[in-house]
Amino acid sequence: MGVFTFIFTLNAGLMMAAFNQHVVLFLLPCAGLSGLAADLLYLLYFLNLAIVGPTFFQSGITWSVHFWAGSFVLAGIFGFLLSYVMIPPSKPCEKQEEPVHEPSLGSVSS
Image (cartoon, rainbow, N blue to C red; front, side, top):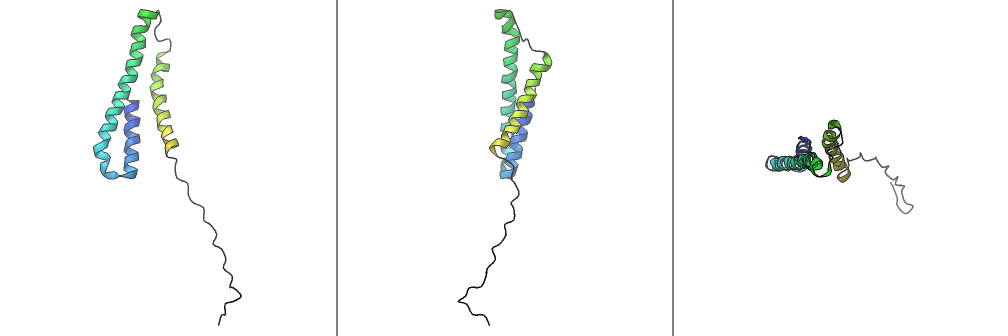
């Protein structure tokens, strides 16, 4: 619980700080609240599986606790890594050689 909140807030905070530092304090709570909403929805999905599954289908969550709880962490990590697909890190530019200028035949030097 809290993985989406952490990833959304961290990712939004770092991205906003890189582009416009003045809006970070205003928009950071929005990213945190959206992360809380995502965590809550994801948790409700698994609660639904735990409650409704045994009632109607005679089977609940057949995964171990470590497996389904770890899916929160993996989803957050993959979401964070996918942000690099959208904006890849910058690469240093290679220095280009300057062309050598040879004097033209028509010019006279003193």
